[in-house]
Image 1 (cartoon, rainbow, N blue to C red):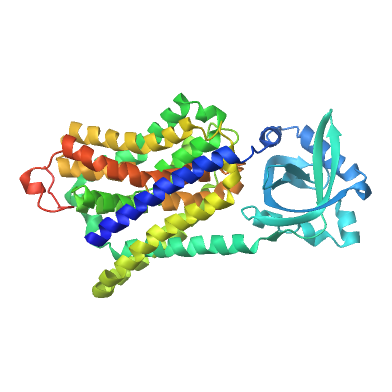
Image 2: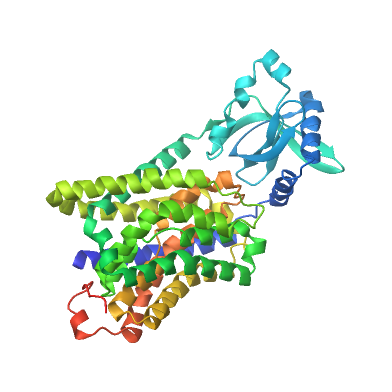
Length: 471
């Protein structure tokens, strides 16, 4: 018990330190550029005539590349897919290169005959396979103009290469999250899933609040505060948070809050399985009216199967066959879960430090909105639970489960899909990371609130996390 108190104290100190660092970064870096150009090109990709895209292809091929400037830099590839064919070279979209400082270049691929003659075909082969990676680009730059609008074009002099640290980081994230979910599986049994038939009312209420009311809350807050229209990927980050299941954090906070721990664990396990369906569905539905956002639902499903369901099943199988080993291994995987979240957020903030410079985007209002999402979610769940006459121990558990989501999953999904979605400023990562840091604080702050608003009866107050039966 003493060890858990020390861990909680360290978590709070880390969260406060992270917020201070973010505020310092906001005041000390420079603002990114070229998002307007990216949005204009994104809209042009949906033009059935593809007039601008055809002009860009021709302009790039007709420029005098002997006068181009040689460059080397780090950045990411973007791809704007079109519904029709561009020119006679069978292009079905336009590749863009975005430098880490925000400058945007249009990739000018030479005609097929020229590529074959110069042997440069390999420079452009398989570009669609590295869209989510941070790459080193070596090429030449030249400016061109269409209708008095200037564009910068790039051709590669070598095949783009993924940065070694980026490869290591992404591989580490995948492996660590796999083992985190395996650790969660070590704590679960079939009884945690069967409880839905024994306590259907409380579990159904919790699931409805998680999967329906919370996304609606995110939509309402983003719309009312202007982020829905002005910064759509911040809104998408909020929706992704609400489209993720509960995690071990909600179970831990429920334990400290003396809520119905068995109910909390069951809600976490059931919602984790349902995430295979609800996470891509909710993100797709709630972002369907925003033209700039393209949700890679297939990749999200693959991620949840590979990094959530498979390790969960493996962990439960180990628990079933070797229960003593599972019990001894659980503390290690719990610590790994905390370390994984801190590493992902920490490295992500360091590598995206320049993102926080945009104080219009990441203003005080932004931080208030992200923190309020967790707090309002918990109060919303608390009120609905009492309105539907659940006992206080259950209301505490549902409140924590609704307001504290699996932020490690949200951040991991963001890192894997943000480039494919065209998230120019990594706003989804910033949103999910800030939520992941601050949810520990909001969770602890709700515990004294529960004592005032949801006092426990003597039969429910035996120990922290005592299990109560449904009324």
